[in-house]
Length: 283
Image (cartoon, rainbow, N blue to C red; front, top):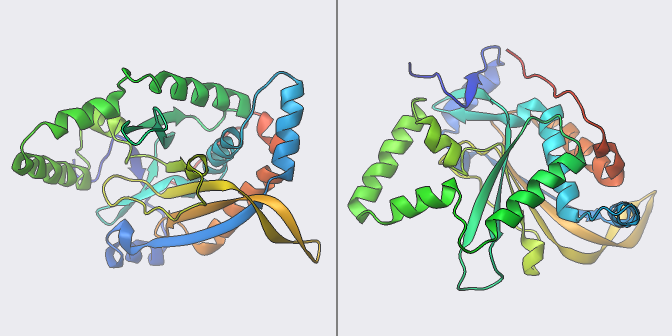
């Protein structure tokens, strides 16, 4: 039945404004909002050093990835998506991540999409993420996303356009095959990219019209920045984080409180060591 989906349920009790704006801003490209902040990394460095003494190798990526999952678990409206004028609560949490198998211009990148419940602690998330990256860095490895892309790439251009248009239609009406949704990196809670590993600062990356991505987070390289702290402007080592989000899924106040919660975990990463019970979205 149109409007029913395998990857989410329709939000019924939604305010009048958020009932209207999906029809005014029909595509995600109409509804991008941007936010960036230079993140002091002193607390992260101290946490990483402490874990290393305990025999646990932790990285900025591990901490930020875990904090993003915790944020989606605690702020479930961030895990919504809009399709065909309807707002849906996503079933589960997935994070897509593009990786290079080798740091070479000749080697193509691949995309991972890893599912989570939101209850996991940072160690469980780290184990799952590190394992997926290690497995997919093998030049011979092909995940479901790679196989789907490879299959579509061999068809003639006219047929490829037709297939994409059919998929867009199926997705719009909630009848996209579950296997394609599972393989698609664009049907995800959030995308995370570490452009700092490429030696550049954080970028604003668009969220895709195709699929259901609601948040795109980019993390940049280490640098020195002036930050405002305790009524003083001081120079600290930082990395910049750049967010792009779909403003149709929740209001500015909700986004602001979510970002404050995220940066709380950046100041005290040890808070991520506890398992939690994820918050449930409204009916």
